[in-house]
Image 1 (cartoon, rainbow, N blue to C red):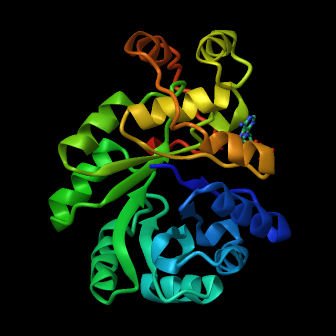
Image 2: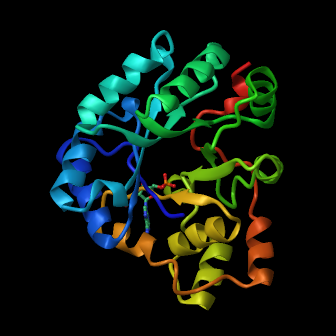
Length: 253
Ligand code: A2P
């Protein structure tokens, strides 16, 4: 339910951050070929001494690699120094998505990835994928937080048994000083970041907060000792203003 996002953390910082996350109790690490940190992620996992089978590791097929998704995963595994990933995601709904999705299904059968999923898919993209291939993704990973509350997408995924993962659950840090959020956080004696992560968890999402700071990595994991009341959840639902900090997937035809 709580994963560690690694976008924009590179080099030794990435290795240290992932190691810190594992020590703090995270057991789900989310990376991608395009993040340029798979080597460091793999190194941190080995350094932690935690059994590989106790860790949920995800990486992603980058947009330029659709010609040969099998080789792309093999290269990711090589960089990670791993025999398999728990989840392989198509990073964006590029035009080759249907063919690549069928190939990804065959890769799952070969055991190099336990589950396959997609990222940044809208309802339209998901409908098309399922109609044309009959293969339902295990997961759709999208930008999601109260300030970008994609209720219809969440409901659609839920109705098809697709789990939804929230990347940038903190809206990339852009909303942490919001006065209404701060007031609710004060009431719960938690930080604004913890409120946003907890909101995602209570919505049934898998939250993937990112931080390169050891104190904040730990803070973001301390979200299982409180709950947000139904009334406060409703107030947070009302924060929505379609705030996107990443590319808009509706721009992918
Ligand atoms: P830093 O890495 O310096 O901690 P998101 O996961 O939504 O993309 O947000 C990531 C951004 O939020 C990063 O800039 C990160 O900075 C910042 N951040 C992460 N956790 C916290 C926190 N608990 N309090 C304040 N800022 C945070």
